[in-house]
Image (cartoon, rainbow, N blue to C red):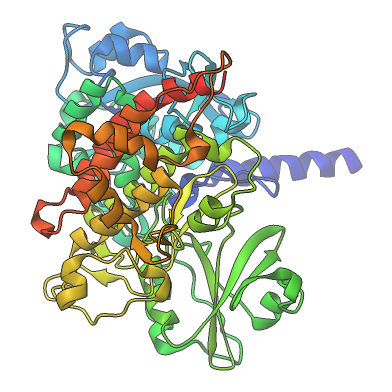
Length: 617
């Protein structure tokens, strides 16, 4: 009786498991620190939920620079090029295909542990590649950052060109219930702009309900899927090349970036920039929250349904316990405390009536270079916002810390990377957020640094939408710490546009170069001097600009070669200064756009890496 009961339970378990559909990952795949300790998670790969240990499956891949022929894509995916050419009706395996052309990739999908996967490998080509960019840019979300980290021995901060990575690709086999209704294959499809369950189902000639059920949805809801995540498409026959398409340039990437990237010689880094720029515009919806006796202000309650599923409405007691009663030991600044919630270090910020605005704005954003908002709490007419914790504090604090003994603050690589992170964050706000926004208060206090010196933009209390009529004029409100960052047209008449942020970014870039504050005290006469005015006047003579720039460079950036001489970084600094001056044009129409700034910084970053390596020898 005992062995029979065990067998019966095992059979029952396998039967239930085999009928379960795959679960849609949503925005979980954007996080590199997912766990599956409590069970398989779609943030990794698709779960083994079929009796079949292996099957034929298909992936959808879109051509990109470097991977735009059957031969190059077959090597990237470790598949036979003849089979790849056949299913896509391509006769010449070396022919360069149009950019963003969809190709069907046939793979063998096998169950390994708890997850299905098709295996390939990838040799890291550049110093700018990370697990995140490899998963989401190179492999176009056909793998995940979390699964790459698990399947490889290298630390995420210790990746170098030439290292070979094992890459598990997202695939799955039909369940028993799917097989029973004629499903033979599952195709992993990357969602793009304007895609919907109905549109995708129409393309592949299946019902919307079947597509929804195959991905764990109980019903068809167009708001449940998001760009740059994958869906499983159930098919009764092999997919046909007629089901593929070539996406337009406006949908995915700018031709300008590709050309610049080719000139720069770093296609991978360009793709990283583009992908981060096109990160998800919508957030996953949470289930209806059971409210306790207290209630959030109505302005904050509105739109809660569109917040990421990790967003939480906290009880005040939880935050009090997390911060040890808001103790002085946990106090970071006025009304800002460090806390620990379920093992995760967070920042708890007490705010007034304007908190609802920041909550509603941050709900719209999901970008690596924008601070993450975990949740909110209302208590005693105050709102408490819970943010991700940034170990190195603000950029201003980091630059002012003259006691830093490590070489972190002494390399151009780190300074430029911080500037590029800020630029990419603003590029996202200006061009890809929906609607687009002007931050309006960019300064080194509102730029926070993680433990590995990655920068994120914070404090959106003054942000304004760029929708028509929203930002043409704005009340002049200049926080004390913002002095020295505001554009002339804002100070004179309160006019706000995306070029307002560009001006402020130019000042931040000068701070990174000089190590000085936006407003500092002149040692000669004790008067306050605007950093931007000082720099512009110093390099006014183009002929002697390089010599004058040498005096502007933060002394901590002057590297000494082992042979004793100072390594000349003047040319590099001059390029950065010229970029910042182009951001500081008095006439807003003459300032660069954030797209141009990102492209320029990426090229400068490449050149800086080699010189920085010399300084560290």
